[in-house]
Image (cartoon, rainbow, N blue to C red; front, side):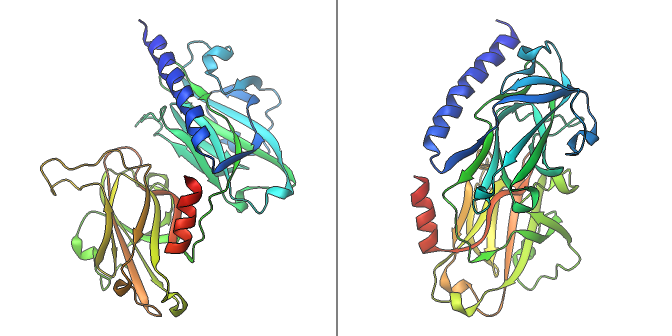
Length: 339
């Protein structure tokens, strides 16, 4: 049996899994169907991400499908996809995301020229992400409501089938929105390495680097596998003192320990050295939500959050999802809607 046939069989299985997952994921509603004809060009040019780039001479191919089935048999390497679509004003109040299904192997995706996501590592690292479903959150600042928008997707395929291969491609709204009392997305302090002293609130971190959360640390110049720490200090209003609070930290690749004011409030996975093996795999898609004991929070005073993260390989860090404080009441509504 050829390797190409084996890969097609794998994608056939993934295709069934995608539809099964979408049936379960009632929290998503398709608002704009992007399946169909996209502009396509082989090769690599960063100018292709520009929404004003003239792609009228490019070929039209069907998405989703392997580009080998669209007239490019045997091609391995870089290629770009582009599509323009209208986004109605009626969607402005909704939480939107771009779903691109599964891409073989690696992608970098732009909305109106702004980078909104990507999976895998381009050469020379060449870390495939062919089995990872692409869902990229879209903030209002990257969208043009009531106007034409442009999506550009840079793809690298190392062997066999390539491209935006399977899935229900489109713009989706998310119905299970979580209410955050305090949004902590944005700039955090960041340092590679490991010291348990960094969990303490009195540790001086002014000289640490600043990094954006949520986002892979590789996307911000840190080609690094190992342990790193995030820190952020925030003053919580006394008006929240009667609420039971939960700290949301989105999705983290791969494992984490979370401290508030020096107290461990939760962890996902096991760091090597804690037992003979260490459980480091299988947690990158798990949404982190940690209940905070009331005596840990200092209302009306500064509070320090410290997150210890281990990335085993590929991209790492706090990379996607809700980051901030919510109440137990709102969290229960959120999780109920997702069932």
